[in-house]
Length: 260
Image 1: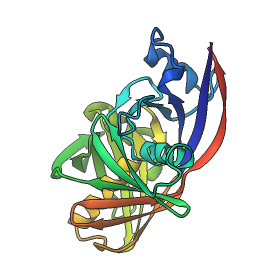
Image 2: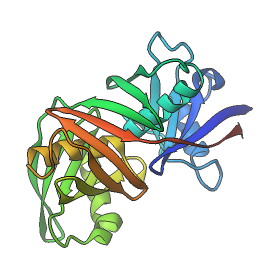
Image 3: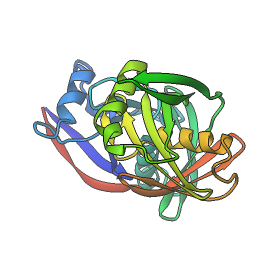
């Protein structure tokens, strides 16, 4: 069986885009995802985006992590699908809407960038977390997916977060975890341990939540372009009140057939 695919990346966060009509309805989609995303026996990716064949009238995507689990939202995934649609079906449009399980989102085609507009309607909850005889202040926020954050204002051991702490928090609270380091009012860095995909080059929803958190803490400027450094490269965010503009480019890596 042949399954056509497109592989795209957004700040190193790479996904396989498959159109729904190319998947046999009798296939176990979760099993397919774990096989096709495996870097040794498949193509290799952080997950799979399944694009509805009907476009409904609003394009709809189902999002899968590399372990086969479903995700309610992936903002880098929205960028990737938007790039595909602007280049194929909606070549004459500057903006469209895309639907995920968590809601409908507006995306804008702007020169070399795709802009995703995210409204954050939930509040931030705090919890003191003890692990290996140390205390960490976690900030929790739901953006369709659950996220937890540690704000690194000093000399936090980033290697320990990547190797141990991020994985532990993600597993215990079933969430994406961001280690956020504010550099100045116009710049911050973030390292993300993603539920279902482990340490990842970047995570759009984790970055948008971190932007909202830092704005609420008074650590970045509102209504100004903020540079964000991720393991996969830099991008830009802009927040006004509770709406984040998430701005970055998206690239096609390859396309082809997967033989199952």
